[in-house]
Image 1 (tube, rainbow over the protein chains, first blue to last red):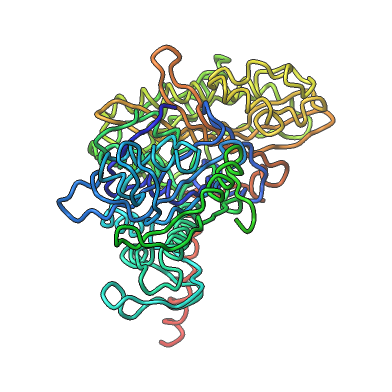
Image 2 (image 1 turned 180 degrees about the vertical axis):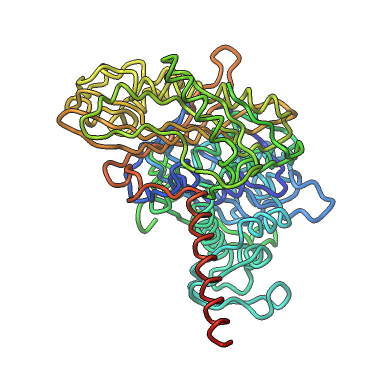
Length: 304
Length: 273
């Protein structure tokens, strides 16, 4: 697979898919022998890839309508790995305010790399920081993310604590298993100030949303044309494209992820103030340790 | 090849084939299929694929079962070859109808190559070794073929091949979903349903369900780049108890029920008079 596919994605299926980390392919409810339930059967799955683990840097841009989202700042940063042999998937959450070296631009918040050099530079920045280069960088924005969640019928997440935001969600989110529509999924992933762990907790919430999307995608992946539709959506809404066949393979990789084998971690660090800005000094040791652990099999250690 | 034209326009996302088991969509195809099957059987061309574009319902309810070869006690399996029915499934992106059928036929051939190599066109008994099923994945990319060979207990008949004297396809069907970009087919998913029966120490039916994701290569044609295969044995692959109800049977039942209701109503009316 070629490196660095930069995508500006609108409503999208594949990103959904990518974000979802899920997979499935419940053996087809829609295959010709509809009357037979085969969910519990063992599956043989395989995928043609040059690399066993595919790494995708999923980026949620904070671009407002009319702004170029590949030259804005990335609010959500998740490095997602998929083991195409085992169906395992890992997501390493990178707090937006992490203070890291940006090649050619000194040090800054990691999300500034998108603004300075687009998805390519952001990919290189995160890759250097983790010691693990992404194969793909995929960028989406709020509205498209909302549409995507809406298109799959909303998601269910396990929310560990109630929280609210006076502007984005005055009534707040209850603790426990809650259903989120498009807008709610967006703000659930975006609210930071009212969370005790700030950026860290927000990144963890983003991963909860990913799991929720994953579960929903799992339900729908067996539907005829689901992956094809997602790929077409990406193609229609990207500026620099991968070849359709390549995206199709990527979609297949996502479709082979087993939800039970998704592991997630948020990079730790300490709060600091640099040049008057509140930032996070990330733990490089942890970043390298997690990347090394997941490099070969997309599986993160328990307890991060 | 028998091909039906869809009534749907060239939609951006055309759901040509409805999912589910509704009897109506298949209805109009049955006579053509039976005729084709008869011809195939007569000519002994069981290995060839037929391409059928399945669209919306166009006719009255008729039997819904696709052509199948039943295997009764004492029958010779080999006497009942079944050819593959290929149908256009969901087409995403604009693609002319003629082209859809061509793509479906090509994808169907690639799926057929797997069905034949992995199950049907083999001499049995044979060991379940990798070598014994060499060539089963000729329509797969090299990397995918390697994985599929390692998964051969599910991707071929290797799990029982040493204990069967004969193996025949009872039903083989392929639905093809197509991804078209700028009117060029770029990728496709073949959803395969295969039922095969075995004779010998293992005398049973098996159901294979597969999703074969393919991309098109100018030199190699359609190649499987990803697969997801399951196999079930016995009850899961057997026909429903009493066989599948056909649309006509349903109709007749409804008519009988209607007549009974009318008779009851008449009796009541008569009684009240």
